[in-house]
Structures are given as structure tokens and as C-alpha cells.
Amino acid sequence: MNAYLLTAAAIALYLVCTALVAFRLKHRDPDRLQRSTVLAVGFGAVLLHALALYGELHTAEGINLSFFNVASLTTWMISTVLLVSAIGKPVETLGLLVFPLASVLMIADLAFPGSRLLPPGTGWELRLHVVVSILAYAMLTLATLQALLLAFQDSHLRSHHPGGVIRALPPLQTMESLLFEMIGLGFVLLSLSLLSGFSYLEDMFAQHVAHKTLLSIFAWVIFAALLWGRYRFGWRGSIAIRWTLSGFVLLMLAYFGSKAILELVLHR
Image (tube, rainbow, N blue to C red; front, top):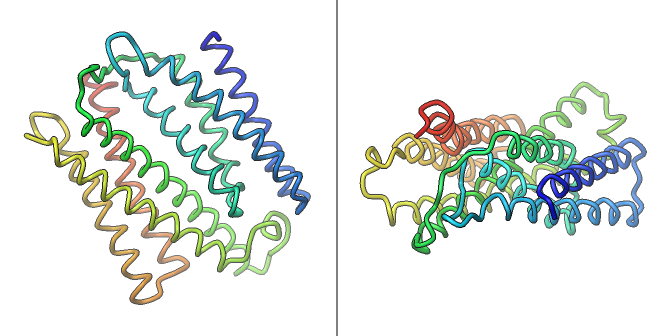
């Protein structure tokens, strides 16, 4: 199928899924069939997104990891992880932010094509590093969105305005537990990403990955400190939110900041 048709169909399903999540929140509908419908439409969207991505990523010269290709791939992985998690946990609310973002980056991927090829003969170590890195970023992005939602919920509860959307969300304790589960899994994936990256790193300055490597390590330290603080001192609430956002900002600069400068500004 044509890439434009696949993209249009995926975006349509993403937006329908977003509308269903919003409807569910507005009406506080606990019906399981309604939730099943959200998941079914969402999985349809990520399937079409995957088909559209396949044509963009796989070329005769190798795998194209241009800036917007990777950005679209990352939002696809975030959406997929979110939907899989939502099968057993009440996290589908995050789709209100994730699905529109995936739609925007699918459009950007078509509008601004680029070329940054990973040659066909690339070793499995580098391929594994790329996959694990994107998975780590996807999971920690979800954790950050969960932290923002938790901050919104906590603010409304403290100001004694628990109505509307807040009533439809799980209890605050459940939301915090979900946050630290996401951070814990993301931290493990980030650790694997760093370890697999060091296996092929020869000269970080010559390979133009110095900023990415250092920022990723700083982010790892922040998430490690947060998990230790949770375990040792029971950190929660605003402390957990601030540390999560700080780690994510560093990670975003590491993954996309350096890539944007190299490709979009310096054209390397």
C-alpha cells in the first residue's frame, strides 16, 4: 500500500483512539468493552504505523535512521509499549499525549525525508544497541508522561478539586506505583543501552557521540539516584516528579539534541 495512504490511515486511527480515551475520561466509563475498543483501535493504529515505517526505514542501501525516521520509530515504540501495558494496567490515559504526537511525527517523517544509513553489513551489536536504546527512551518517555499526569492529579487533590478527569484516574498511590515500575524498567533498558554502546565505541569524539554518551550517563545517574531514594528514603510526590523530569530532559538532549544538531544543522 502507498506510504501516504498507510500514514493517513494510521493517523486516522490514532486520532479516533485519542477521542475514545477522552470520551472515556469525560464520562468516567468503567465498562470493559469500551476499554477493549480503545485498545483494539490503538493496536490497529500501531500496525499501520509499523507498515508505513517499514517502507521508510528499509532501503536498498541499508536501514535509514534519519532524524524524523527515528523520531517516528520512537513514537511507534512508545505507543506500542503503552498499549501492551494498558492490557493489564490503567495507563491508557497517556494516549491523550502519545497518539497525537505519533500522528504529528508521521507527517513530519513524510514531509522532511532524510538519509542516514546503517549499512546492510552492520554487526548485530550495533543493531541491538539501536533497538535497546529506542526501547529505553520509549519506556522513560512514558514514565515522564506518567509523572506529568501524577503532578496534575496531585495538584488538583491538594487544591480540593477532585472532580472531572481526576475522578476517572486511578488512586494516587496506584499512579505512583505505575510511575516507579516504568522508571525501573526504563532504567534497566538504559543500562543495557549504555553497556551495548560501549562495546563498539572506539573514539567518542571522532564518532561524534561524546555529547550523547555523556548526557546519557548523567541521565542514568539521575534515574539511579531516584530509584535509590525511593528504596532508601521512600521518595514520592514532587521529589519523584522533579527527578524524573530532570532525567528525561538530559535523555532527550542525548537522543535527539545531538542528532538534530548533526543532521539538521551541521548536515553530517
